[in-house]
Length: 138
Length: 448
Ligand SMILES: Nc1ncnc2c1ncn2[C@@H]1O[C@H](COP(=O)(O)OP(=O)(O)OP(=O)(O)O)[C@@H](O)[C@H]1O
Ligand SMILES: [Mg+2]
Image (tube, rainbow over all chains, first blue to last red):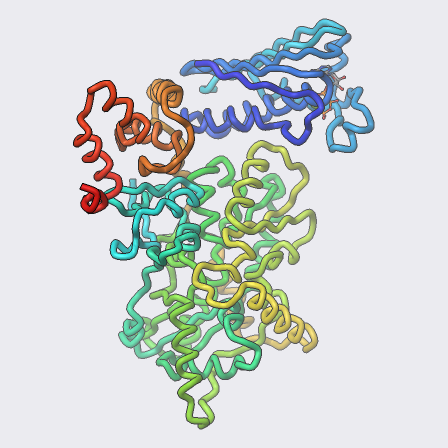
């Protein structure tokens, strides 16, 4: 089963709406609340990264009975050094983004912590693709 | 699944199946069947939105027979502060208390007298369990139920303590027993501002049995007191014995900010059920950081806006605030309840668990749930998505869900009926029959 969500760059007022929708779906599928929590936290951070750092993006969620795979793909500046970006506290967020309460440099590390598989691909000046997989049973 | 008691009832005489309550219900617990609103007991959280939106007063709060108080020799009435707020300033507290005695109670006890003990216990609970932040108050039974059915992942954050109502009931009973009254001669009755507190007493969460023996609706008591006051033949009434000191915090406890203003750290006070749902979504998504405590109340302006409140909620708040201010101007008095503080603190923790009972899941088995979800998606692609409610469900999505769960037929959708008639799959008479199942037999009589 597949679900698609559009993510608009710069629209902080709606950041989190895609991950909230995914949460509602997982609740209906009777997935363990602790797993739901992990998934939602990871998706939320990936979603906010598109809003904060890219122009626009899409989230594609593929569900099967044992796992969820979410691919967040965006058009944007891309990430030059992914290892660096993965470090806790590393952020290039603008002062405007920081004013909104984002930009602590904790998003990507948080994503890593909250999914079972993480794969990030990025092309500078083109875009970034973040693929997250989480299994329902631990 | 165990049964849940709900005090909200639909009067078949008054209900016309108008769908207002169905649309307003925050847990989609209502369907129109045979022309009547019907409430799903597993999904209802007793918030009272249906009652408040009903324009025909067809939804009411069932209460215990008042005369049941006379089964007991000693009749304690537990009075939340909002009751006093129902009356205009010229009616004194003494007069209200005296009326309660006159109507048959032998002792008046203010529910909120145990608030200081409770607040202390809450503080201690939070201080010793910092890993469970953000803490969610269990003050409002509708909120606790909402969390059980819609936000089970937040249950661990709920502070699992008894409420002032329980503590004051336990105390009142204990006090009488110490005076030598046998336990079975004591009846403790609570005057409720809402349906949720009744549910909390009749089917408590986290404990086997409530210490309260019966519940009386606040509007009923209001009328009885009013009636007594108009009939009064100026003779001075006996002053009640149970009345004690209430701290400013205790008086304001049931109002919005009542709890939130009593604790250290970052505390939020949220009232009205949709606002509560909104904040719970955010908390569940971890979108809010560094929150220590959230006070959540289902009613707009908390208990002042309770479904059984007769007075304007802002006037209720005004009266309580001025009483609170007056109390702040006086030196704190040693209250008799203080003697039992240790005893009450020992019992403040709920003995049982707050259990999750999700109404969201389509099936226990994730695989089956996925198949159902796919069916829902297919149905959604052919129905009009205008949420007209004419099928007896609050939205097209809810109908699709009901169909998949075997609780409704797709042909209940008026749009689908037209398609089916046009394609010759059902006759016009059959279409009427389907509609009658939703809207009731008599609905179509005068059109035939
Ligand atoms: N989708 C993206 N497109 C472009 N750059 C990104 C994207 N996602 C992350 N980055 C870069 O990686 C850095 C670290 O990301 P991370 O999510 O860890 O922190 P942040 O977004 O800056 O702050 P926080 O997530 O704590 O609010 C970002 O500052 C940004 O430079
Ligand atoms: Mg980020």
